[in-house]
Image (tube, rainbow over all chains, first blue to last red; front, side, top):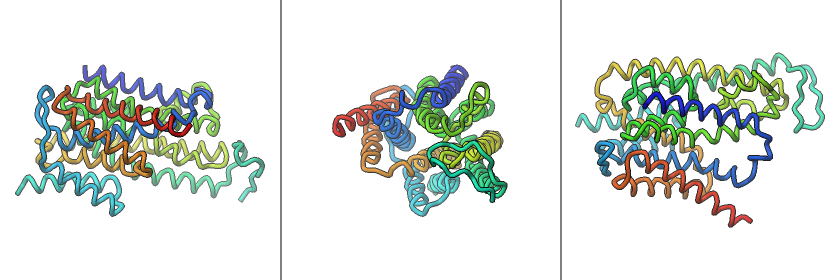
Length: 103
Length: 240
């Protein structure tokens, strides 16, 4: 199932890229499509952050919890405010959570 | 420098590209490729810590090849979601590449097999390094240097990160579960430029969190996609 999902995601993502290069611009370049395409990544990434940081438990029985991951996210926000590059942001959030768990 | 025909600036000029300008574009593209490629290491490590094996993680970088979609895929898997829900989240995040393609098509002016091959390289970075160019030749150099550079380094570093992540044991000891949230925040950060995007972010995260205890894993993230659709449609009414 995992492989089917990987291949489906790959085929779909390639199709989306190729469609952009192939479809006449005016078909998709409406302001509505533009706005939704701007908002989609924002909404999904924000939701992924929420789930990634607060959800816990196995897939059939998930709950919310506050733990070291939230500290990691906070550290990432500080790093971003200081204009740190992507890799530094990721490392800082991992290190913060790892150190908290050592305490 | 060779003078370029300066006619209508909107019309791409297929003419010659001065060697100095070409070198500059190649240098810029490779710099972006190195910076982007480096964070493939974090994708590789996060991929295996989410439960995928090394080959599956590398297959995502090789075949999906669009960072945010790949992170979404493994993010859903890590949260215990069904792989197909992960694929759906990845697809929704891949929609922006379609819009990049729309802007690139007249500029790159490739057709047939070249267009089909170039499509795989349509990502944030290759778009950013080519849409601003004034001629087709310059845009192609920027697109190919950045796209191919990121492709090679992203895949190489994914492999390194996946093997390293596989070797270290419990990913939680290294805070890798927290690193996923940090990675998503870093991807989201530059997009929070308007009030609408900030509202969308807060609303989507809120909806997702409310749904976490109520729905199977992965569904909260897809629900956020519905929030984005709703906000987009509503904005249209207000504007017109």
